[in-house]
Length: 178
Image (cartoon, rainbow, N blue to C red):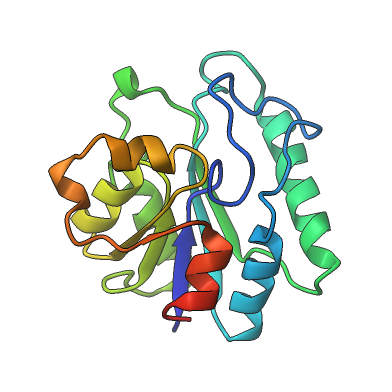
């Protein structure tokens, strides 16, 4: 099974330090929906693993998050595709939840859902948490400059060594391994 895991905010949709709190604020990054459609047409199973601490912080509730994901899926329907699975963590770092990235709980949930291992499979993110969880779970991490990606690059964190960097999800899909 070919399966790819994508982070959401900053990879698929525009990100904000003030959080994406409503379906109206949820706006796709140019080219991201087309990139997902291309992945699907090339036979990839596409899963999303996203930290959504805005729920725990009280900025929005699970129903609002569901509405954001409904908008996302509706936009993908215009390309005749959809996301296969969305895992999210509503917790903040202080909760020390095993499902909040960089912990591997969401990745294990994806493996359980599809009955496969994610080892060696690609994961695309824009943060150190995304890169760390991919490496911890023995996946192939890819970093995009969108969202918090440039800030992540500027951190010069050693965990970024050897991680391929692309301008966007669309660039990664068009120019690389898919």
